[in-house]
Length: 345
Image 1 (cartoon, helix red, strand yellow):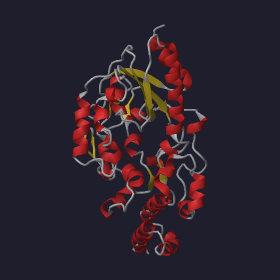
Image 2 (cartoon, helix red, strand yellow):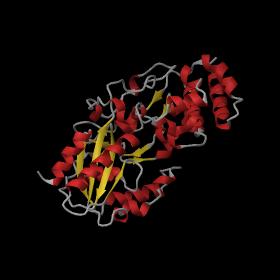
Image 3 (cartoon, helix red, strand yellow):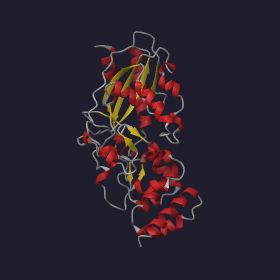
Image 4 (tube, one colour):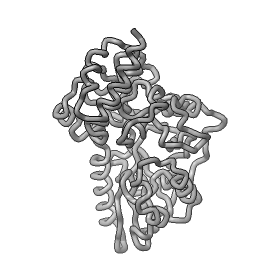
């Protein structure tokens, strides 16, 4: 069995659901990535601009880099989609964040894979392992490793399992057997574009992150623009809509891995519970969870907008109290929600 096949087998033994290998080469999508950043579509995500030269030339990360082993891990579980949840007193947390923080989980597996390759390699071995944080544009390498194609919603879609998966990479100096990119199978479908409540998908394959609900509720640290608040609906952390409506996810694969199963109360959580969280309770509830990224004040900001969109006047008394909150971003969004619900009386 070749080294490439042994690597793929070991990666699946570790728990990865898809494994592909891409060559290190010049890719036209990297120029698009630069243009996308220059257009301002990344908003405040300045980390996407850091190490841009390394991202476009990974040999600056691993000298003599030859191959990128791309691994995918399904996080989708057998629970309802956001578009089927209609209770006006409940919010939505993106399903990728229902379990433990994937960065920690996947990085550990990638390090194990790197160690395996080092032991199996007939030549001196150098590598770096990344999941969503290093100087590598993972979606591009996922495409060239045959993991899937770029969907019109900019997610990587796999014909067999859908798009509900995380990506991780091992960048190495070893030359391996390479996979081929798969065809784009989106066809004439535009469901993701039409379904986006904030019109963040400007056209097929181009996302303005500054309008995306995931960006607004996770990455943006300041006030959410007033003109986009209504489109956020009941979302309090992230958004799944463009994946929910994708036909390739109609029979998407699920995982039984316990680490990705929903923590209690995170599937369609009630506003009553979330609005009453203290900073200490937030830290405890979301320990080792991706949700901690929003921090307490950001999470409460999101909950307040979702409540303001709920049309549920029962929340007016607690909103009135939060209008005087010592944290300015909370008081400002509470005032907006209070005013919006007051018009429903």
